[in-house]
Length: 120
Image (cartoon, rainbow, N blue to C red):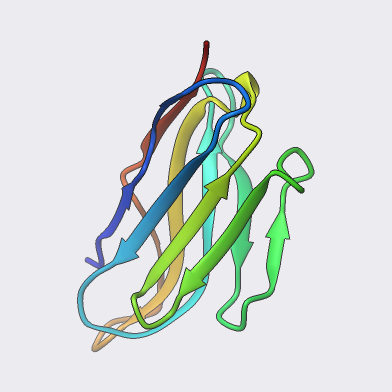
């Protein structure tokens, strides 16, 4: 397994900001697209944003202009800077990465999820 470990979730007031981090560990030959998904209670998991190795980004319409995804390839880490948070952003956020581990097949891995709650 190639663990993806997320951090940075928590409780924030509407209009506030949070930064999520996700680091991949283990012996890795290459990391391709990395992204963030979220799942709110009673809803399907949805893409929030993703970023390619070269830095091309893609955002859900609901977060465009408020969230910024970035990555540090040397640190095998992807970030999600969330600003102007709204109550509807409340969800469990999951890190996702397309990884080619050394001596293993290329696989899409998921983190364990981190809770983000936006509430006054």
